[in-house]
Length: 185
Image 1 (cartoon, rainbow, N blue to C red):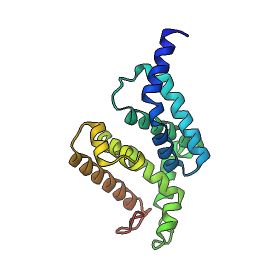
Image 2 (cartoon, rainbow, N blue to C red):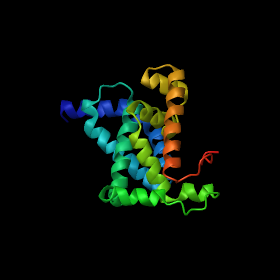
Image 3 (cartoon, helix red, strand yellow):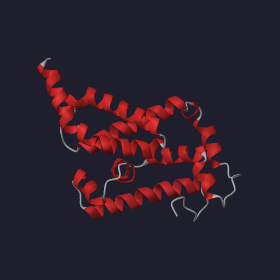
Image 4 (spheres, rainbow, N blue to C red):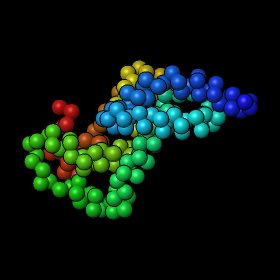
């Protein structure tokens, strides 16, 4: 075993292994299927192992969740290449308001809802996206997210509120959810 490999293994043990439970919980919340969640975690572990020598040791959970987010984005793109080929057609489908506006469950289950949420999430400024990753996707408390990002708890709460509002506004503008009706209500 080379010194580099042994350092890589030690760093992986130190920074990645303790986060396995969180990674699986987040992956399950993203994919909604245990098998897909396991695949996403495995992809995240592989990517993190390859990159561990470049990791500075600060905020391992945030680093891993970023890797997971990017891995999931790539997985979605591979499964749904039409999102990349013709974004205008995708947005037309998203804006189609023929769905019964009173049926919030149907709106949330609709695949255009997922595409719109993902697009809105990806358009968020990094400081908002990171808070959504940590709190909404990663299940961290406000305090844990504040500690991870080294900001006050109030900043976390403000950024999360603003990020959720932006996503909600994009959903409303795209006609995916009617004004005043929110899937989390």
